[in-house]
Each structure stands twice: as C-alpha cells, then as structure tokens.
Length: 162
Image 1 (tube, rainbow, N blue to C red):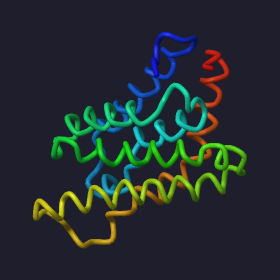
Image 2 (cartoon, rainbow, N blue to C red):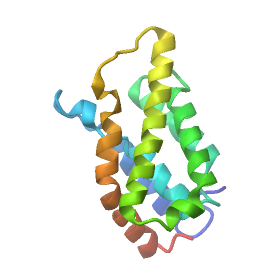
Image 3 (cartoon, rainbow, N blue to C red):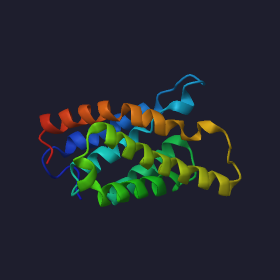
C-alpha cells in the first residue's frame, strides 16, 4: 500500500496534509464543536476511490499523527480511523455506487462510530462529557460530504490517481 510509488500518490499525500492543516486551524469557541473531522473525510474518500492504495494501515498512521496534533491519548484517533478505514473498505463497492446523499448518510454513520470511540476512550480516562455536541461533527461531515467528494474526485482525475 504505497502512497507515493504509483502515479498520483503525491496528490493523496497532499490531500491528507491539507486535511491536517484544516484540523489545526483555530476556530471560534462556538464553532469548534462543529468542526468536521477533515482527516476522517479524506480517509473515507481515498478508501472509496483507491481501496488498494489507502487502507487500514494508512488509517492507523493518520490516526497517530492526529493524536499528536490534537494532544489526545496516543492511539485514540488511531483506533477510530482504523475502524473507519476497515468498514469503508469492507463496504466500498456498495457505497461507491450510491448517490451522494446516500453516501452522506454512510459518512454520518462512520463519523458517529469514530466519535463514539473517542467518547469511549475519554470515558475510560474519566474525561467524558455528556453534552449533545459530541456528535455534531458527524452532522457537519454529512452536510459537507458532497463538496469534499467533488473536490477530491477532481483532484484524483487531474493527477490521474489510480
């Protein structure tokens, strides 16, 4: 599963770097709970588009980087992104043929799974919060998915990622 060795691999790496930068951009206090998980969205797209190149291992590495970026317990995002990548790869043939709004529902469920794992880990640490904004990134991800899909599809076509 080499990202750079094949044609267009630099575009995949660049899209993940942009996703990490979007995760690091400071937002106002009221908007931060609604921040979409950009790395998760990019991972879902690339697992759907090129499942032979982006998979569970890439999800694990991205999760470790995201843990370092966000300062969470090492492995928290790694576990979540690994499961998201696994489920996306498992059902990629079914999800790829769905219309974008059906794909948005799939993305919503995958982000809810990712957030549930994060909530579970925080609960084990004794840091869990019971507010309703825990799953708000899932809603913003579902709303933004059609645009994320279109932008990354255009990148994939322009750089001939196969």
